[in-house]
Length: 432
Image 1 (cartoon, rainbow, N blue to C red):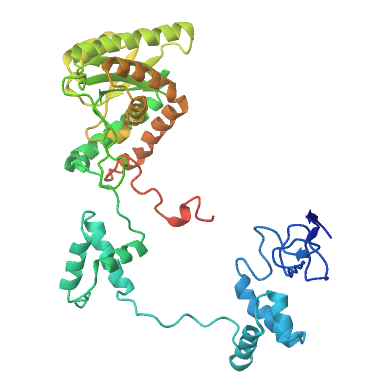
Image 2: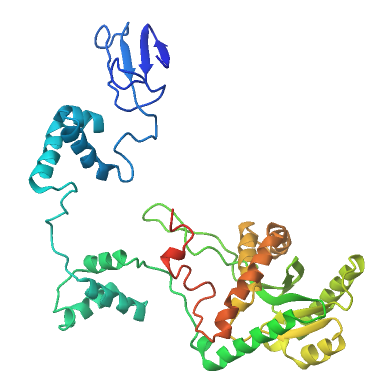
């Protein structure tokens, strides 16, 4: 015996092919037979329990991938080649395989020379053909907002392709699910985003960045933008008992629900500088921020000497006060030895990694549940520590993923990868 357990005065033994025939080890489960005995119902005594098997999670012979396909061949080999009986062949393949099942397999082989199972027959015939299902999929691809009722009406009204097939909404939904189509949140894309003019501007921007990449002078990219925080912002969906609304408390109109605008600059080393003000940003506040940013960068160069004649490339969007004479002409002209200005193309937030930073940072601030402006300012400062430097580097690298599409002047519909896996064979988990 491989393992014995004493319970009361009973003995339990695990392992074995059959009762009295070999053993495989403790905890195994295979072609074993469980024998139990004792004094009687409800009594514990010198009963013996023997169980065998391969072990939890292990498959027996004939199971697993391809196991069922090999069973008929193994049974035919046992019966016809080795001359076993039907019952013996069934026990050798699987303990619960009856001799009648073995006889059916042998009869099919002798009469029809067939080893595989017959294909499934019967049931209702499919309503739509493969070509008709493709037409339904094309309707959804053409209009992502189309309803199931509208699809059904088009199917019924089309006498050429569908021959006035009368279907239910559940059938339409089942067809779309079989074609791997699901209900999704609609992403709104401005009409102007993929206009010819804006495609050309994206093309010119990427060319400008690539020229700066090969510039001999050492340089650093800094992405600058502003974002507003509002204390009344909360999650839009919650949970509660059926029949009761999900409620959350927010500040009133006069209780601190105004905006606090944050201006931030990020780079490969993380968050370089940030400054929050009550209300919105303007030209004067932006100039103050740029002066503070310049002092921080010059101080960092003094304490950490690097390459000589280092220049910072400020990349930002086309907000009006970013392009004023005081900002663009005077400040950048005065500080041309240290700073360079590059504007992002319109309707191209996917090229600005600071948008992803604001999205992550904003929810980290709200997770701290700031209910007053003072607490909000403190939460905004503390949330900076929650974002690692690797996240900034990942956002900047992700923004460069769209460079090839910009150079090819392709339509870009989403701020993230529109087609994450174009080909199922290219997915990393396709083979798993």
